[in-house]
Amino acid sequence: MDLCYDAGLLILNGRTPGDESKEFTYLTNGGCSIVDYIVGSPATWQATTHLEVIIDDTHYCTMGGDSDHKPLHLRLSINCNFIEPQHTVITKKNLLRFKYDKSKVGEY
Image (cartoon, rainbow, N blue to C red; front, side, top):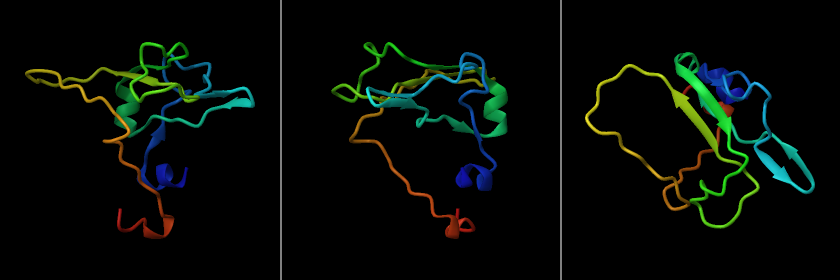
């Protein structure tokens, strides 16, 4: 939350068309919660036409194995010209991880 506030970003879950009911993103026998987020600038929020938590993720499993985390699908309406769409599949090998340090906010 501090990272979003400091960087002027918004959590899009629960405030965009398609996710008005604030679907859970993490489902286990022990309970459910929202722990997976789509974060964007105010311009990204305005361009968002649909955000969906994919509950039936049998067609979206690209990381290998089952996960308690549900995929998020974001659709944007943007005005741009490009020749060919490029698709990147996120895997464990190319996933970057960052840890936010509030004391270094000036360096970000």
